Length: 126
Image (tube, rainbow, N blue to C red; front, side, top):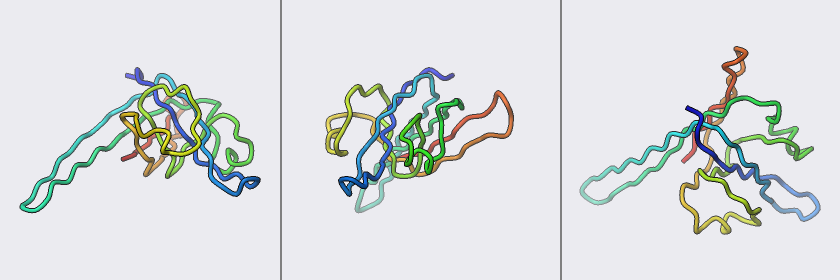
């Protein structure tokens, strides 16, 4: 069930440069479901790709606020970027990902932390 790999690019603010930068983290052994929908009417076609990711809970996960301070481990929050694959290079901006497939922006994150052994993080992106 947990047989896919993703790369998360966490968007963090750098006060020294007064700009956003991206911190890369590869996660192996996650569950990925991709959905591709097409809606047509008389005047237009709407294509919508969406992603659901289930990430087994680990000690590396930290809250978004703590991650902004320490940059240790990984976090996931709205507007972070997920690539369904292993990306081996760091990026300066999202333009660096333009030639890649399966790129999604995180819309929703839910930490499921109510039962030992079933703890996981559910991520929805599009």
